[in-house]
Image (cartoon, rainbow, N blue to C red; front, side, top):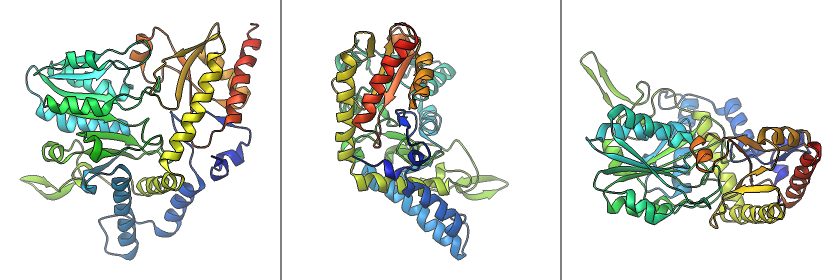
Length: 399
């Protein structure tokens, strides 16, 4: 898949080997041009004006929501709530829904490899209401043992929140089975889809979660836009956590009433341009075909793992068979931050640190890791350059 020409960043930095798409993806001309053209020719506020620019902007904004609905196969666009990103979406679920439905002795289950965004909100909620937060254990290969997961579920389990794909290990969790388990036990379930949405097909009607959350900037779209998919039953119970602007129906001195979902949860001037940019990003993914993207990235991951496993001074963290295009690793004798600095001098961009997943680091007994994550614009030649750069790093340190 040769698409580098679609991304202007590689015109500016022709030697750049960008291996950090798990953190954020670069934007194709299509998305950038859509945003620029909208600002130049069509920009106006939405839902508030009867003049032509406002009407056209509102139409485009509404089309963006329908585009997301189609992309994830949601029953209705009313289930698509625009947020600032995955973190914002999870916080809406935590404090707009769960906090208002908690009962004494309720329990929440997450895994021990969650991103902080799907860890801290539940931790804070548990602390605030003095309820139990349970952590599903992860095997040494980075997989989730469903039998052990089942053992944590009981009549007190009210909510389950798990990642679709680990941002550190690349492990694809068995979310369909987890969702079914939740429903069998009358628990609600949230899926953090930030690392999945650009790498494989997500079919909401097939999965049937209560929440599915993701960000635009990890799928070749702009920052500042995210999605909180919420099921019909959730929308009936969830309360807004921000107030003003579009979410208002009536305001009187005596009190205020709110409009219907999804606008009920979108206070203030919405992310108009970001939503339109996200629509363009989805169109780009559709043009390239999400299944073809997955095949391409899976092939790159397979090649990279094969080459890395040949080298005895590389330790790969996690070896799940069902995995996505993310690989975390360490090199004997070189701190990940030093490795990242050296690779940067070779024009190779990787992520180093705890990846906003400190409990994962503790589980695998490492202070930090180096991480590579592939996107649509990577190719096999870049893997060769990456492997060579690891040897260069060893030489710099005198090994």
